[in-house]
Length: 238
Length: 223
Image (cartoon, rainbow over all chains, first blue to last red; front, side):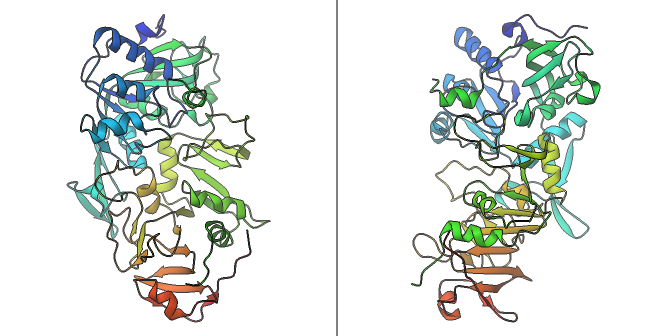
């Protein structure tokens, strides 16, 4: 078994037009900037992969990361809970011009839909959004005297994730609050691609400390000293 | 019109009701100010949607770690005993009824407990974040808000007009003029500014203010 790729280009191989791509992170915390920009670079060079559906909590900030994907024209639709940020220009321009789709999902429902997909559960009921526009058209049901909305699993072709430590077998740890959606996305995507700050030999991570077990991880690439999106934005990165 | 409380004073008043040992989620912006006014001697643990329990104040400028942020994407620090977790666990804490209190801002609150705080209607980019989960998860839902809109229109209504965030969920509203509990589909006035009469307050409130027992004086220090 060897999940370790020899570079970013190899790690993102096979991501094709029209795919659904989950991208870890909450704002800049956990955003896999190097994987994202490898994908943007490939699109700029070859015109592919385009027409992507991107699943993330947000819809990009400034002109890097997901915002760079949107600016490049690779993204047909965002699935997210909060398409606003300190500089939401990239998404807002295209959204108001009708050039990008939006599926707005409450944050906890988004997390649970992804978790459900990873756990093989096609639908579940939640009180979230009952009686609101977000629930329109969805089945509802009463349980123990309270109303709930049926939500469906959310799968993806690919997940791009940033981890702190990985071992060769794909076991992962994360840094501080950067884990957010990553462990769920790793479960829900057909191919999970991880950039890790350091890849160690099996045994190099205490099994008690593993957050994402290697069974959920397909490819690893080491990116030492990865960029942090928020720090880049504050440095004025374009 | 009589004097009214500043946002900081509204936050101070809400903070006085935080019980010792509570697990609390403070919404982005105005509600975040509440943490600053927590009474001495009470231990309150703050939850943030992006996966931290027991975070503390902002770090000094220049010492931010941008992997350590709250839901408003502001840098925070950790208290001893803090914990990290992923998003599904974070919202299990919310939806599973484990949080004691969530505090939100609002465009409108209705006497039946409905709240509208995520969309001002067509023409803008809609964004809901974790609000729809929080309003149906925490045991108590507090709203902090000016009593009226910038145009002077009531925000405490018979029914909400804007797209709803949640139905029948708000338990208390802390405003610039009053503290109002919501019980059995009615606004129950708990406290009002002593400088205002009940009639004056009712004139700025679309929903009917009912009184159970006595109405306390809303007295808040300069903060």
